[in-house]
Length: 394
Image (tube, rainbow, N blue to C red):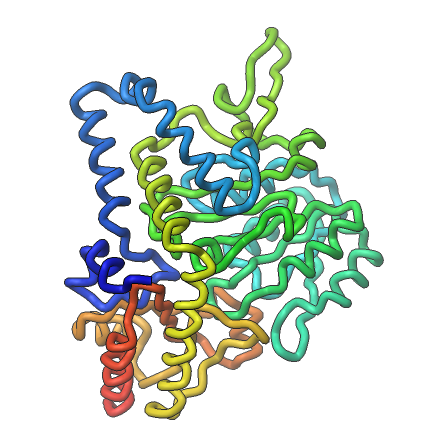
């Protein structure tokens, strides 16, 4: 990878050291330009008219997303964010009282809240899958509970928002595929930093976002819907004229592909930016990105241990570009401000995002640092000096 070229493509590198890619990454110039150019076209010629004239370019979104996920364009839907994607998939489930959902202990907090809402409204039941000693989902416990509870759905977050652990989703999918359960995979934090092969996961649905490691604009997401799910008739609770055709007064037919999960009105400028982000990531190479990130993450974790006497809180046999730890005695907001005053963007994650995980770790909040491939070893050195300064404060 030509790091100088990548950083020249990233205007924000001139302003900040950005270690908050798990929140929202710095967009490359081609991504921002794609959004601005489309907005200008709408400004000059009208929204409907520009969408008509750009139909082929807009369709490139589906082809590029399909390439990223090793699937077909017809399996991809465009959404406004990962939670929107997730909930559209979830709304397709015909839950009844006492239906069981199997949930990983490290699922995204919004997912937990959605299931608790379904439990309150419809009387579903939530069962948690146990973790191994190293923190991943225990696949033996997963299969045991599938056999015991016959769950309607199994939900797994590939990479939690509060920890750098990477779940073995292909192994998980190889188990679920043998049973009558829907597999909903949250890939919000994994897309763009590691390969995600939809076919290999055997997931029925995969939700994702663009603002994080894919380096796209905020307000854009994607949903993968498998052929199996489409052919089984899964559709969102509230389809609109984008996702269904009104046939007679009392009948509609959903469209045959994943666009049944889309809305007719959407942010086409952000779709263009998302397409540019997909193409940028594909050109860089997802495997090359993962390799570069592994080097940066290993250095950062080693330097925290060596120079700051800090052991990170992330579990897992495989870890990724989310690094969490405790340092200093400032509040979360004051800690973020401390680093921002030094030109470094980091994030903090509270217990409200990881009740089970943080209870086990006996922490109320952590610093979350998430480097990405355009970051440098020199930026890590500067960050480590800042951490030492934070520790020296009383």
